[in-house]
Image (cartoon, rainbow, N blue to C red; front, top):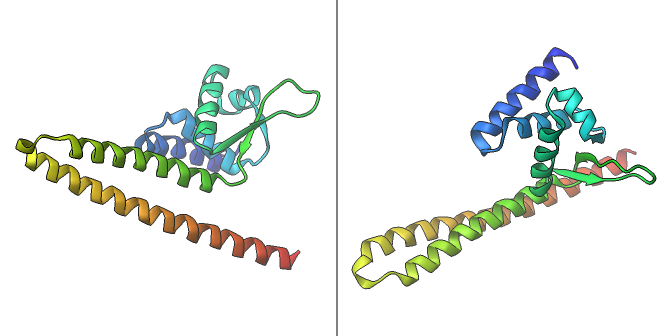
Length: 161
């Protein structure tokens, strides 16, 4: 691995840790897979990133759960392999949608159940509710726009082939 790759992987680890709340190793793994599109086993990931196999396993599963990595097996091989999924962006949109919907539902349920003497609290919760509704509307638009952009790019690539 060259120095530019190593620096990118380390910086991605720090960025994901700081901005997304995931572990630094998860960020490093994502950075690695962005540079190296080859499917990898946990042993390979542990060796290449100089981490324990247990850390590689834990963080690969986290990235799999949020839809950034896919786990698969090849015929006759008992090992799991990981790679960046075919449509990680769709998965990220879905994860964000579910998270924002859960917050919205909590805000709505709580605001609707507050007693009359908590009017100021209800108004604050309703303002937050309105914000999350707005965000969810935007997410749907962004997801549709992204799908269109990907479709156009793939169609253009197909004509070049």
